[in-house]
Every structure is written in structure tokens, then in C-alpha cells.
Length: 273
Image 1: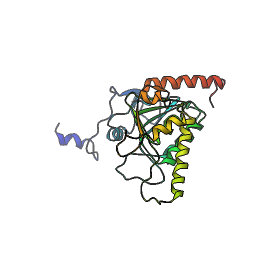
Image 2 (image 1 turned 45 degrees about the horizontal axis):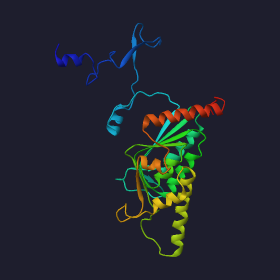
Image 3 (image 1 turned 180 degrees about the vertical axis):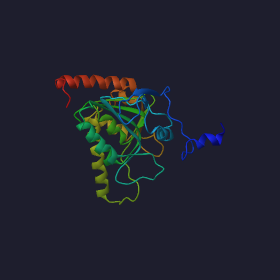
Image 4 (image 1 turned 30 degrees about the horizontal axis):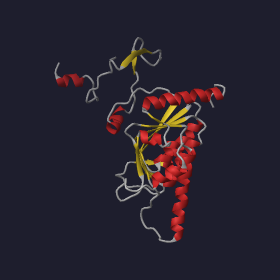
């Protein structure tokens, strides 16, 4: 049979698409649908998602099979975008996207714990504080893991959870609040910045073991940052000053979150809310 004779047997179909055959990714499934011919098998894809191609293009890897879990992972990466839209070349986390997710997690009966993973350079102060406030007000157990960096306004978010971890090589930059753009040089401007800074200091000291005196000393330390004041804490240093609870990674943070979930269940009579 020639190439052209083959397609003449299937008029109107070009290029020819052969029927799916059961393979390593498919499993035969018998159907009793009366609309199908008797004795025919239908195949279904087992564990294969629809948007494989999009996931490969965006993430560089094929997706793993979806599983049901009582723990939800929320990532905060890049720069925290607040009231102003950042340039398109900036990798950002938009707070107006995260707040509805956190509200949905609070209402979801299937989710019993939330893991916050941070690798952020900071960003908008009020947006970061808004995220930190809503995280600390969740009724469900929460844990945070700082990977790479949790700088600037990322610090309140890291300490807002019930328990916090930092990777051994991760860093956190502590510095005073800074403004970009036009600043009016009047006493009221300084007072506004001082009040905003006090909000950050009060939140961090209230949700961690670092004292206000120690935190302000780290914030205004000179000589460590070029052309600026502040401190960079790496791994164990953030634990030693009382800001982060423990040095650890994904396994430690998940184990701790499961422990917090068990305690939360015991306090609530083992009933999901």
C-alpha cells in the first residue's frame, strides 16, 4: 500500500492521527456506554495533567501527580509588590494575590496547616505588614521557612507564623525603613517614617524572641553594609539573636507543622473546622 493510498482510506482526515493505544501512561477501561460499539475498550490517562506542555515551558519540569494534602504551601519570592506596580523585569509577589488565598485557606475545611516559604528581598512596607498580620491571625497552624533570603519587610512575614525556620545558608537583612523618590524635608516626614518603623519593630518583637533593644541595635549598626546601616544575619545568627526559632529545611519545617497540626486537632477535639 502506498503512502497516498493509505490516506485515501480515511477521507477528510489529514494528517492521519492513529487511535490511542494502551501504553505505560494509559490504562484500559471497559465502558458500558450504549453509544459505544459493543466490545470496545476506552482508555484513560492515569495521573497525567492537561497542561503538561505549559508546565514544562513555565517551570522547566513536568508536573508531579496531584495528591490531596492537608498542608498548603504558599511561596513569597522576589519583591513584595504593594500599591505601586513594579517594572515588568522585576520578579514580584503581589499582595493582592496572596490575601485572597490566605482568606480561602482560613475557610477551607481540607487545609489544616500552612507553610510559608520565603525567598524575598523585601518591598512595600504596608503590603508586607498586611501579609504578616493576616498570617499571624490565621486560626490554623502555620510555619515559615526562609530559603535564600528573607530581607527587609520579609522579616515580619517570617516571624508571623507559629514557628519559623531558616536554612543554614539563608540570610536576613535588618535595616531602617527607606523611601525611594521625592522626600519632603520637613519634621513631619521624619515623624511619619519613625512611626512606620515603630510598627515594624513592634510586630517583630511581639512575634519573636528578639528584644526591642537588640533589634534596634541590629537595625542601626554601622560598618557592616556598604553606604548604609544595618545588619545581615546568616542562618544560625538569626536563631542566636532570637528572631528565628530554628535552623532547618523542608523536612524539619514539615515535621514541625505536622506536630502543630496534631496539637491543634487535640485542642479542638480532633474535629476539622
